[in-house]
Amino acid sequence: MAFHAEELKNAFVADLEAVKSEAELAELWKKYLSKTGEVQKLMSGIKSVPNEEKKAYGQFVNEVKTWVQEQYDAKREEIEANALQQKYQDETIDVTVPVKIRPAGNLHPLTAVKQEMISVFAGMGFEIFEGPEIEDDDHNFTRLNVLKDHPSRDMQDTFWLTEDLLLRTHTSPGQIRVMDSKKPPIKVLVPGKVFRSDSDATHSPMFSQLEGLVVDKHITLCDLQGMLDSFVKKLFSDEVKTRLRPSYFPFTEPSVEVDVSCFKCGGKGCSLCKGTGWIEVLGGGIVNKKVLENCGIDSDEYSGLAFGIGIERIAMLKYGINHMGKLFENDVEFLKQFKA
Ligand code: DAH
Image (cartoon, rainbow, N blue to C red; front, top):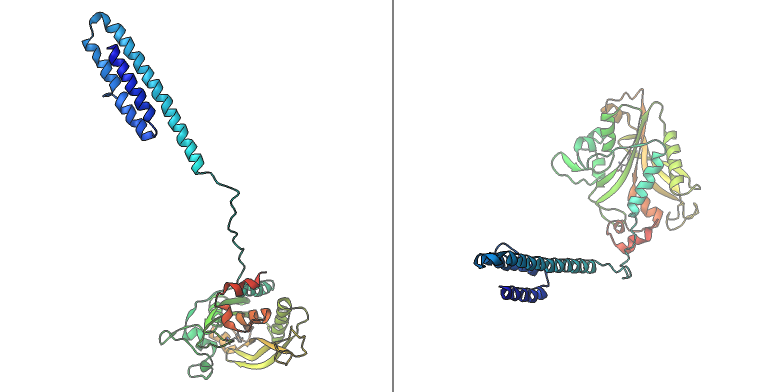
């Protein structure tokens, strides 16, 4: 029997040497140490050993078993340590490898200008309201006093969706929505996208406007001019002056176009102001009494001022961009120039 045990040991040592992985280790355990393994078989041999030798045989097999177990444990530790080492190696990060530097982005000039404009007005106490881009005839035209068959509807080349629904042609319907939902005093800005079937160097089928509406007691054209004067000074420069020219919009009476003195030449006349010294920046006026009445506001008690500014136009003026399409092409080389 002793010989048999020696054979087992030799075979075990050879097998142990060959173990290189956790899977092979598990096989080794199965072959020698499991209930059906070689060590157990050796143990079962006790049956055929004469009684007087049983004790010694038992001790001997136990020693073999302990020895095999120890060898096995040592191997397991070695394999586990190797596996951990391999894991460390695989997960090592070479902190000296040069990285690909990602350039920091910047705000799109339109976003930057829009935020700047909003923040100037927010400083004067304006709130923000955003209306829907799909409007109905009533909000976009009728209640703004742009009556059916009125020629001013032709001024705006509307994208009609149905007989009644359209892509809003201006942010002015926001005025109606605000006055429907809020009692004066009202001081609100409506920024947003607007749509017209129009496309050339200074027009795009989609562009953005910033609408302003103030409704309170005793609002006059002077309030409008004072407010816009302070707005353009903050936006362009302290030297810039405003001038109002009479104009026509159905929703304001009187209506004005607002010009600023040219911030490039200081009013002397240059290519930007086409030699006039003045640049048109927005439309506005005193809210037509009919529009207030259309929203259930007593026009004897309250009056209002309103204005609408084209955001692309301001961005183009501010940054000297000569084609509106540039603002929508998403040409990174172009946009990179506007890092704040
Ligand atoms: N809605 C006008 C447009 O798109 C701009 C405008 C003019 C808005 C006068 C106003 C205003 O609120 O009072 O051309």
